[in-house]
Every structure is written in structure tokens, then in C-alpha cells.
Image (cartoon, rainbow, N blue to C red):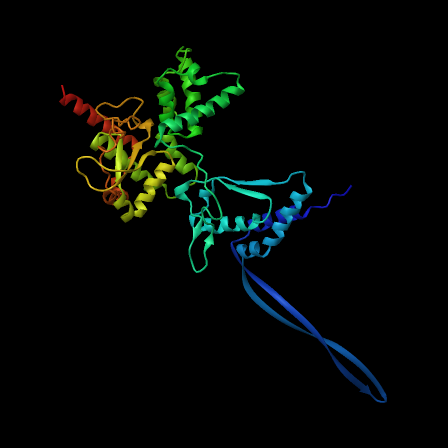
Length: 405
């Protein structure tokens, strides 16, 4: 039996063929027409008639872009998808596109607009996984390109934050219970953790489900290797978290193809130095007024939050000691200062509240100056590794410890 390729397969083959072509190519096209000319030849009394063909050719040259090709065949691709779904046993289908932020940011609105048009009006559902502050879904030009949030698409956050640690802990606990159910284990929170350990795991993960499970597995391995089989303690949580340290997260910036990671790394090193070396506190404030003035730097702060190197703990707060204005409050990732526990550094315990329901230590946190940050990340002469910064923090801790004796 001879199988003929379906229309969908033909489209796939066609797309694969143009994938290797240049984004823009010069195309030569020849348009030809022909006409007949009649002639009569005589020799003596004999005459003969004949004709000859004359060919007219016109050659033109134009530029063809890949995008032109995709646009031209959009309706064909849409029809092929719809036909394939109709011929299947399913009523609907999902198209999952992960790591969308790795697409060059200038092209992201074009890509998502095309995909949205491709599946609009069909029984295909488009789901895109991305990093919030490295994503642009709309570009306003003469004609708006892209999609509009809450109009064309809806946003779902898969990670929880440390803004509401109680809600985040409950969410992670439910996830753990669902996993434990598969293994036939009841009440894993009570069976596997001492009273403080689960809270430590929630903090160490930053509310990220993947990090929560990875730290959990590493903590169990560390505890068993020490012969501790009863339950997990905070010590083993921090040991497990050290496997997912800031080094791993910084390396992920490069591994995932973030081409402009240098400004992010410089800003991160500067924030770490400011908090742990200069101010000796694990949290910091960012002025909302400066966030509006230094939008590019504030965007980098948001990206550090997306990559879980810092965590938002309060999006809108005041500051103590008569400091005017409104602020965003952040904490450093716990992998920086919990294992080993740094001396002479104030751990801002933002999950605790006073009698007026204000978070401990947040309003007293130091203000990080975005103007100075902008100067720092553009000064390559000030580059240091994060390890060098932390060594300086340790040296300062020892000096402070000596002075207090």
C-alpha cells in the first residue's frame, strides 16, 4: 500500500526546507511570451510560405523574506491543522511553546502574533511558557503588532512568591501531598519534617515548585548520608539548598542563552555587596519614584527576581526613620546566607509580623540607590566575581567580630 503524505506533512517539509535558507534572498524571475512572424519566399515560379517564432523575455529581480513566505501560506497552515484535528479522535489540542523568552525580544511580538492568528477560530489552544520580565508580547507602531494581555491572552503564574509565605507554604504542602499519595505516604509534612524544617524548605525554594522538590530530594540524601533517618531538620534543608545555589542560577543565565547576562551579573554582585557587606542586612528597598525614573535598571531588578536570585516580599511599603516615599521590598535568595550562616548579618525575618501586622525588619531595610546602580553596571573596571564579593563579606564579618570582643 502506497501512503501519500498528508497536507500537514507537506507543510512541515516545506517549512523545514525554508528553515535553512537566509532570512532574505534575491530571487530572479523570467516571464516569457512568443509570437509568430509569417514570411513568403519565391524562387522562379515557385513560392513557399513559412513562419518563425520570436521569443520575448522579461527578467525581474526581487527580495523574498521568510516572513513573506509564512504570511502567504498562513491560511494553508491553518487549514492543514484544522483538517488534521478533524481526522483525529480528539476534539481539541494544545500547542505548548516553552522558553519563549529565548527568542530575540524584538521579534517576540511578531512570533506570538503569528501563532495567535494561526490558531484563532480553531480548537487548538496555545500555551506559552516564558519569563515575565524578559518577554514583550506587543509592539505599538503604526500598526499594533502582538497580543494584548487580558484581551487576547491570559496570564497564569506557575510560581508562588514570598509575599504571602503562609499561602505559598500551603500551596507547596498540597503539592507534596499529591506526590506522596502516589508513593502511599500519608501526611508527609508531619512524617518527614521537624516543626521548623518545612518552613525552611518553603523559604529556601523561594516558592518555586521545581526548586522545592529538588531541594527536598537533596536534603533527604544529605540526611541519610549522615545516618539521620527520623526526619528532616533545617540544617539538611540548607545543605540541600546549597546544591541549588546562586552559582547554579547565574550559570543558568548563560546556559539558557541570555546574551545580555553581564549587566544582570554586575547588578546582582552590587546588590549582594550593598546588602551583606555595606549594610549587613539580607533585605533592601527600592524607591518607587526611582523605579519610574530609572526604568532600565528597575527592569534588570525585576529580571533578577524572575531568575530567583532575589525575591519580592512587599510590592508597596513605607520606610521607617522618616524616609519619605513608597518602596518595593526584596530579600536576597536564602542560598547566599543560610549555609553557612553568616555572622554579623541581620536576617530580616519578613514572615513575622508585629502587633500592627507589619513585617519585621522590612521598613527598616536599607534603600538601594538605582542611580548609583546604573553607574556601577556600566563601569567594567569594577567587575568582581560573586565569590570575591562574598569573601569580602566574610572578611568584614571577622573584623566586626574582632571589634566586638
